[in-house]
Structures are given as C-alpha cells and as structure tokens.
Length: 282
Ligand SMILES: [Zn+2]
Figure 1 (cartoon, helix red, strand yellow):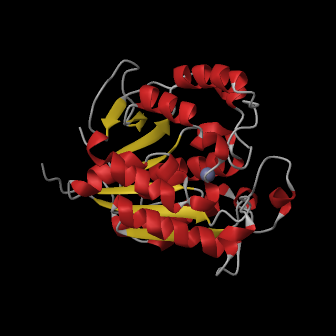
Figure 2: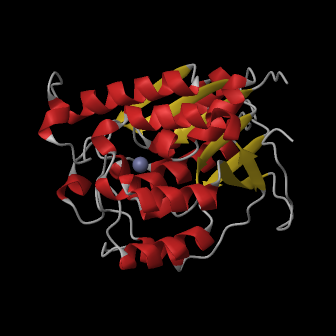
C-alpha cells in the first residue's frame, strides 16, 4: 500500500515523538507519506545524567542529536525547531525563563505554525490532546497554538504575512486511554513507586491522569509492523529513559494494553463520539 500525502506533527520536546505517536509516524512514512515534525523546544529542562553530556556542550545539543537519531528511525523527512526553551515542570524555575515556551504569546507561536503549514501544505496535523497528554505546560501550550494555527491557516485574512492560505484536511489529538492509566497506577503502587511522580523527570502525575475524562478514541493505528522502528527511535533518547519505564513488569503491561496501537481523537472536522476508523487519512 503506497500513500501520497503529508503529515505535520506539532510537539514540544525531543522524545515526545518517539515515546508518544512514533509508531504511527513510522507506519505512514513506510507507506510513502512525507512527515515533518515541529519541535517547539530542545528539552532544556529535562534531567540528564552527566555521562550523557560527554561530548555535548549542553542538554539542548544532546537532546537535539537524540531527536535527529530518532527521526531517522521513524523516517521523518524534516525536523523544525522553533527555538523556544523547555518550560519545565509546573512551579519550577524554568517556568520564569523569558524564552520558555509558556511565556510566548499563543498568537505568536500559532503564527509560526501557520507559516509552516502554508509552506509545507500538510493533509493532516497531529498534536497533543487538550491536557497535553500528562498536563505538561509545554504540551498544553503547543496544543493550543497548533489548534489555533490549524483554524487560521485556511483563512487569508489571518496572518497574511505568512503566505497564501492553505487549509489542512484534518486535525488529530494523540490520546492515552485512561483504562491503561488506572491499571498502571495500581501496579506502580504495588511496586512501591509513587504513581504521582512518574517518568524520568518525575513530572507525570498518573493519579491525576487516571481521574481525567476520557477523549473519544476515534482512530486507532496499529503499528505492529514497525514496532522495531519505534523501539529503536525510543532508544535514541537514552538520556530520558528512566528506570521505572525500563521495569520489565511495566514494559509487559504496556505491551498488553497498548499492543502496538496509537489512539487519536479527530478534533477537526468534528465527528460523532462513536466514530471509529483505522486510518488517519480515512
Ligand atoms: Zn514532552
């Protein structure tokens, strides 16, 4: 099966693409779809052990090279860094940095995405769900900007300085089924790990997430055929792989629940709550 078509993924940090929708991106690039990625920051606020910084002058340059490594495995044709700074966890000092993504006006972030959309002319735009997957402030900010940009790109009256209007067909939000989170919370407690401080940067509050409302799982992408590519891409982000996500029991659980599938909500054009599909282009 060969597809022509273009996908633009709009995310916040190096690793969002691999730990998130990487399987889906690899599925489509394998079918001939041209995938570009906008990455708003270089993950400057991520915790990185000193051993991973050897040969790099900063966390940003280490994580940039990790993303380029991952992109190669996923078949992403181009990565565009917006140049904002990682805003870090809520309440951290990184929030105050003048270049932090969350301090950039949404209209300004959206303008740059509009410019990219008008030039690249993607059929589909993919980003986080409205809670940014796990309430990371950068994920929420870029999700809002990407949604604004999607709505503005086709309107010649908006951001006219960024080129002729172009309207992509569909906007999707990548979602994590809450059912899996609820089980994960129980398992982590059994393992003696605090489920409210999950992940390498301990910024994922699974307890809060498990209580969130579920988004409609409109499209499920089975990426079994390329799961080795997603695995290799994830391994590129060595500085961000945590002990807890490496735990064999957790890995097995993730396998059982995710089973090589990514889930998306179709945000635009709106569809019925019970709409179900197996192809983002469908
Ligand atoms: Zn992220």
